[in-house]
Length: 170
Image (tube, rainbow, N blue to C red; front, top):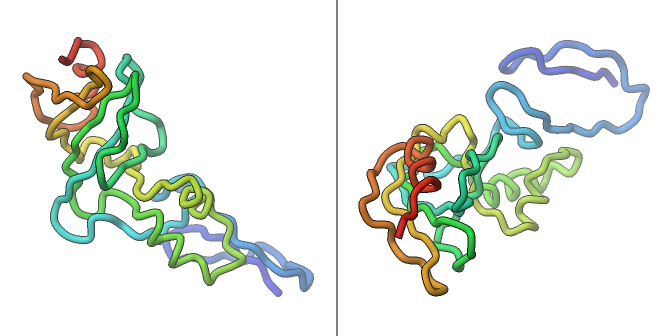
């Protein structure tokens, strides 16, 4: 059986022979994908703009390289974190659980999607989409609950986060 390597979008090039052994497909990063995930992920939202939430450090820490975990519902209070209420445009996030379901029959495909699902990660936002996502509201921990940050200038995630982390939001 021949082995192939992906050279470009939809372009397979011979890469030798496999000598009759079974093959596994391992997902690695490319210019259009996230490390460990296939290019053909299920995107979210499928239409319009939807609300999602993110937890970020309350102190001055940059956005993570690669991707940021998103929540469909506000997660429980976590001391030392800020809760961001985000507006996510169509197809900007990855629906981890739908992608895992789609890959389940392909038992020879090795990706990070099942590990993410087991960690209860539903949605992720790739770093290439950070600038397209807008912060609607932000919440800081106050007396054990989320308290809305006043005087917040709405805007793209990378522009709003440094201000939130450098000020005393409440």
